[in-house]
Length: 270
Length: 246
Image 1 (tube, rainbow over the protein chains, first blue to last red):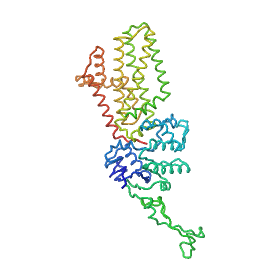
Image 2 (image 1 turned 60 degrees about the vertical axis):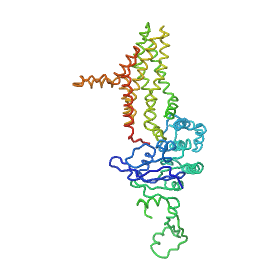
Image 3 (image 1 turned 30 degrees about the vertical axis):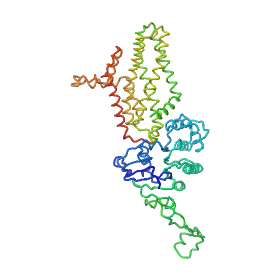
Image 4 (image 1 turned 90 degrees about the horizontal axis):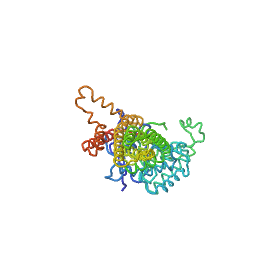
């Protein structure tokens, strides 16, 4: 039986009259990669802030770690990337040394080398103020992985990365998850990328989780058919009438993006 | 708390601009002391030195350390990482306060070392009672700074604004806040209540004057500790609900 490592029950959060989270229930299992999907302002970042103790909430319960753990203890097992929280005058190693002290990482030197190698920043000597957005992003991810925490939380981790960088980060998440059984929670607007990375997805809309589904659920919900025709330019016109010669017909799995828009009732018509 | 303290000290002790600022201040205060101590007696030197420590050295070094402890942290938002990795908000407040007090104490110790050397050059050797007086009075200056840092943490942690905190710190450490509050509590009917004797600075001065003559005033010391604890608890309450941005 799978073990829950983060549990949110009936979570409510308002900013004045703006009810950001109305009733969020979420159970994240140990060892999974969990994708959190939602539009801007849907409350993804607020959920992360509440989990990390950076935001208060008006109702509900939050549990992190083993049953009976205090929130502080649960959080001490967590690494996260939510922004670029670095001292600009220090270089990558010095910044990570600061965080290694903060996280009480044993043998910090080889650990810092390990995470910097993973994100491709090994050997960089310049101060962080001279880094590009992508380099800062990579350093943030390295910091989240420092000390090999049980849970990692990433808010938009691939923003600002080039396609190769995105693929590298995806592979790294999957490797870390497989090798150490690390639970990874990711929010991203790049749904195609999230579909390639996560095992389960939660769709957040209007302050609630409206759907939780696995990769298998997504594949089972296939309803899209792609037709290859001999004259693409006339396809729409011909489709309206009889007599189209269909060259190839293939059922495809619905994409996470399509599924998301279907659930929240938006997006383009197909 | 230890891991946060260790991390911050690693950062602070690696900050070159801090050493340059401190060096300039050590030279300036040392030179000033040298200039005004020509022909001083041991007791005259104690008076000069402790006045300098109380009015200028501790508040100015405290201000430098206050900036070093808070400004970079709030800019880089590293406090958020500390909280997110399990350091409680209460511990964050206490650690920051402790850092300011410890760093200023270290600066004060270095300055007193310089002052003793300057005094020796001027032919004044501190020993016995003058030495004890210098240490006691300097210690009380540090407690005054601890009070200023504690009251400031209420404003800083409720607004997360280092500049506002620094303004209040200057007002508290340089005695402006005491002057203002003293003026307010002597307006009209309040004057007859003699509330000024219960102010933090008044309690500190009373405890200090007794310590110099070799007695310990427990009620005044308890009053000082109560102030520090109350400031801390208010800061914890103010910080508890503050939304921290990534």
